[in-house]
Image 1 (tube, helix red, strand yellow):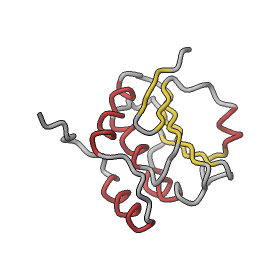
Image 2 (tube, rainbow, N blue to C red):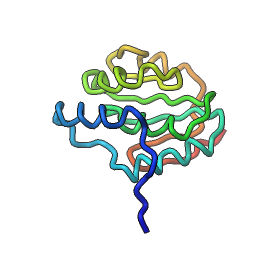
Image 3 (cartoon, rainbow, N blue to C red):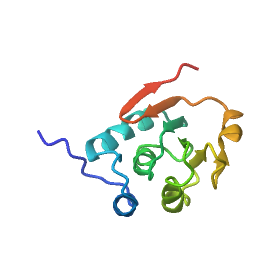
Length: 131
C-alpha cells in the first residue's frame, strides 16, 4: 500500500527550500502532513492550534483539509524561524502565526484572549478539544 499523499499544498516546495536554506531539519514528512488534514477536515468551522510552527510546513498542510470558515493558529516561541511561514502563508486569511516575542501577525497574549481551539496539533499528534 502506498500511503504517500497525492495532493500537496501549493506552498510546500517553497517552504521545504526555505527549511533547507535555514538548516531547519524538523519539518513534517509528507505522510504526517497529509494525515494532519484529516482532523482539520473533520472540524468544519473549527479552530485549529498547531504548537511549533517551524518554517510552516504543518501550517501549510492544515488548510488543505479545512473549509473556508475554519482557522488555524500556529505558535512558535522563536520569532525568527516562523518568519518564513508568515511570508509563504500570510495570504491565507485562515492562518494566523503567533510568536512568544510578538511576531508579525499576533502575539501570544493576543491569542490567549480568543476562544479555545476545537482541535490541537503538536507535531504528528492531533486531538479534539472538548467544548
